[in-house]
Every structure is written in C-alpha cells, then in structure tokens.
Length: 287
Image 1 (tube, helix red, strand yellow):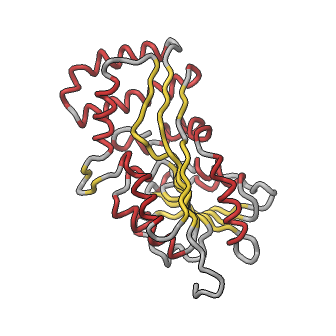
Image 2 (tube, rainbow, N blue to C red):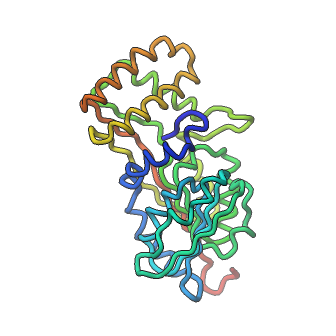
Image 3 (tube, rainbow, N blue to C red):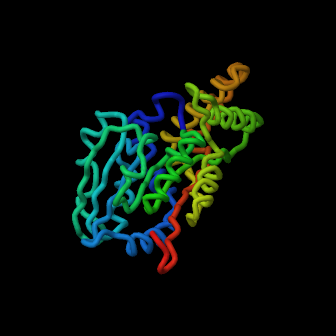
C-alpha cells in the first residue's frame, strides 16, 4: 500500500511491511510459473530473473528460494544505497540448493527494452505496477512478450480497504486516497487501482495468458505498528488529494490510532497479483 512521497521507498517502511507482503503474496501463482520456467530455462538450467524496483530485495527474498535451479538475479533500483547492500540481503541458494547470483543495476526501469530482456526467464516486481502509467505498462507488456519471458507483478492496490470497527468517514478517505493514486504526478497519470486491469489488457492483447489472484494484507493486533504507519500514510494521501478532509484528519486519526494501539482494530488492504505467460508459437511456426 502506498504512502505519500519518498516515504513509500524509505528502507524503514519497506522493512516494516515485508512480513505482511510475504504473507499476502499469492502462492497460487507459483505452480503455473514454475511449469513455465521449467520449459523455458537456459540449456544449463539457469533462470535469469529481473527484479524491477527491487528496493531492499523483499520480492527476491520471498521468491528465489521458492524456485528451483541456479538463478541469476538482476536487481534494478534508482537508489544506489539500497543496491549497494542488495546482494547480502538475498538468499544464497535456490529451493534445490543450487546457487543464486545477484547483480545490482541502477537504471530507470521504464526505459528497459526487449534487447535488455533478451534471455530473461522472469521479470518480477512488487508494489510497483500501480505507480506506473498506462504507457509504461504497455511498454513493459510489449517488451516482455517480445522477449518471451514470464512476468510476475505482486501487490498492486485494488482501491478497497475494510477497517473494523467501521467509521462514518472511512468511505470518504478511501475515495480521496484512490483519487490520489490516480493523480497526475509530474506529467505522468498514475494508474493506481486501475493498474491490474490495464496490465491484463496490455498482456492479453499481445497473446499472453494472464492469471490474477487476490493478495490482501490482513492486519490484526500483532501488526499494530504497521497498521498505524499505514493509516497515517493513507490519511495523509487522502488529505493531499482532498484538502477539505484536513478538518476531519486529527479526530479521525485519533479514533483510528487509539483503537489500533489498544489492539481493537483490524484492516484488510486489498491487493492483486498478476502472472503473465507469453504465448508460444505453434509447432512449426516461426518464432
């Protein structure tokens, strides 16, 4: 779930959310992914995985040892401080005990093209799709399908939040937050909750098979630190979008945070994971 501005990418926030992310990711997508990778691995069995916007590497830590075979991970991020330590944060071995190699690369992921993806087995990303534009998603879909690689995009916001106990202002803050996620940001119209539908259409229009599955955060009393941080970011984004909500902000947050700290508040923050598997040429057809 996105917070406002640079805090979305702060290492402290990424570390705080990692357990909830790991529990939420849709393991149901792993079986079709493994089947595809088994059929498309390099002759020596090596999988080349490109992690877009890797942050502290949580997607790699979750996924690498759930896949078999030797792996070559290229980790992309724009923050050199995160990349400097990324190799030490990744698992050393895959599910079958074979080695994992990690290569950091500082690059704007929206500029990757099909040549950059040549020989890639899988493109992966987490909590990224909803901060892209429709043009950027279309470009990723075009390049990945041309390269013939699988794509696993986890934890994209769906725009639905369920907080218990409910509050009369929940719906207003949710609507404002969703509008903020779809905002025009330095000339870029972000997709926000429309991201999975947009990506699905982009991949399917190019003949890929797309499978999606819900991947909600389920936050209970044991997650109160994360819940409190998420609530404050959620409300801040809503108020940034709809300034008239500022007059309700303090009292609303006080009610929500008091219940959270007392262990009396739960939240379901809905996300969706997407797996795209490129179509394969018919037997005898040109590749």
